[in-house]
Image (cartoon, rainbow, N blue to C red):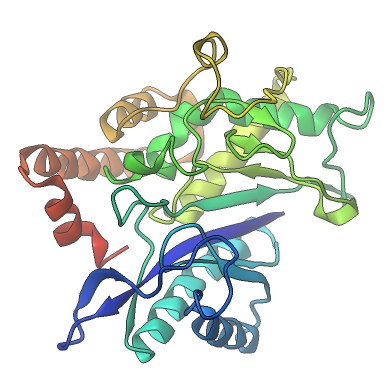
Amino acid sequence: MIGAECEFYLFKTDENGEPTTKPFDNGGYLDVSPLDKGENVRREICLCLEEMGIRPETSHHEQGPGQNEIDFKFSDAVNSADNLITFKQVVRSIAARNGLFASFAPKPLPGKSGSGLHINISLMKNGQNIFRLGEKEDSKIPESFVAGVLQKITEITAFLNPIPNSYERLGYFEAPKYVSWSYGNRSQLVRIPAAQKDRRRMELRSPDPATNPYLAFALVIGAGMYGIENNLELPESINVDLYSADESITGKLPRLPENLEEALRLAEKSDLVRSILNERVIERFVELKTKELKEYDRAEDKYGHFIENYFRVI
């Protein structure tokens, strides 16, 4: 089962209704009115989603000015991907109805919090959630699943973080940089939240909303299944804040790709990616992303290039 936590920004529009990069408010994490001006917009979004059969679970202001998050109930992979596509359209439409512009770009504002798409996964057997770690007999399958995701994450990152702007988010404001896991620590790539029974899960924190959820979910599940099929052992958890940790700790950890070019090279060579996605899909994806990278590299004003090519469409 998969559940998504999708972050987005609300921006003001100009007198012609065109998007600006001026945030709708200056609120912070879990702020309430009057600092959180997006509360009524989120409520309207949630009510609309409920009418469409998509059940929101939580809604709150995030770290960045004008940044919001709405989480919805987990489902199977295809339904969750469908729900995410619908969710983004609903957010955009209701934002526009309120004279605002919603952006799902990974890093719309330099120096501010980026927007993530955290992917939560539970493992089901005979209708029961079997996701638990640290229990000798019952935890082998979920531990191997997490180990597979950790081992293969660099090979699938190009699909989880598919634009140059994606890599400006990683490593800052609770977005991961290293390949590691922990219980409850938000600086890690994989976090195991404190939860009971049917809510036990792993949370993958690197993906962002620019991803295609159908490809992303397929690849993450495929990486986990690789771990199960090969009986991979889960490495030890890293129970420190990696944003302030000493080099003696971070220097030993694998890192996520630092840019899209590196991520594409790893994806092209990946047997795992080829075992999950059609060869033509991979070829076209790499071709299109390579073209985007060349245009990005030629741009003198990188942020201006982002605004022109990505800000309004993601």
